[in-house]
Length: 268
Ligand SMILES: C[S@@+](CC[C@H](N)C(=O)[O-])C[C@H]1O[C@@H](n2cnc3c(N)ncnc32)[C@H](O)[C@@H]1O
Image (cartoon, rainbow, N blue to C red; front, side, top):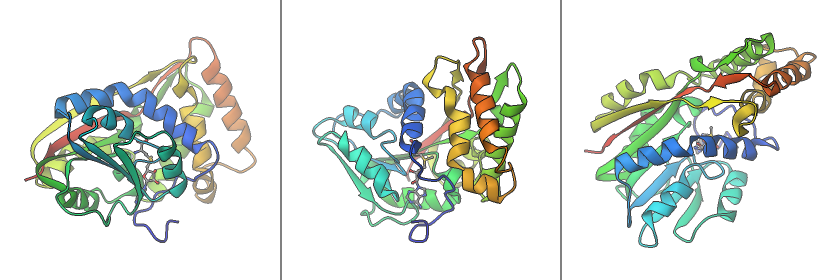
């Protein structure tokens, strides 16, 4: 798959990956809604979610734009798109394509959005160029990207530290930038958008929350990269995952997620 598409996206399509992205999307939905409110997305808008995965924020967009509006989700993963199509409303379509160079017509969207694509697949400037091509003049381009340094758990536990180091090491080892949130406002301003807005947020997770398995399940989805880069031994991999899961299930344990920076601005 990766040879046909640009970037260096390192996350594997294992079973469980759709569920991992769905759970993540639900936990981040209130903040995504808030951003869409501030942007002013409403009836009749035409919206694009680049790198939408199994759905991304297309469902939230679809409800806002109504029957007069239109939503397109674009991704390189056909399996993700099949899943996204299965629950989609009539105003939404999903297209297989390259985030860095799609076949979609220029200047055809009121809103072009990407979440966790620039940080994981790399080259934010090139993604922004494609987003600027696709948004109409005066349209909005919005990105949401993480800062993994705020992944912190209390009480502390060595298995958490090992998995956090494996996660951050795997991404940086393939040229991804899990700290892109810190630079995102600067990068978007430099791309030439006007009226650029900046809204960071952070989600907290307890044992009873759906996101509780975020760190173990994401490291599982990065298994090949983690082993190739020697960030964990194959022999210790299952034990570290099990110990971390046990720790995160203990009453009174809580962690903070990566900080997400939402940055959006208008296409000139
Ligand atoms: C971390 S996932 C995020 C999915 C979704 N945006 C969300 O927030 O739930 C990143 C997505 O970007 C897609 N992706 C990575 N590189 C891509 C490329 N060159 N073209 C199209 N999609 C790409 C992956 O297939 C994956 O679905």
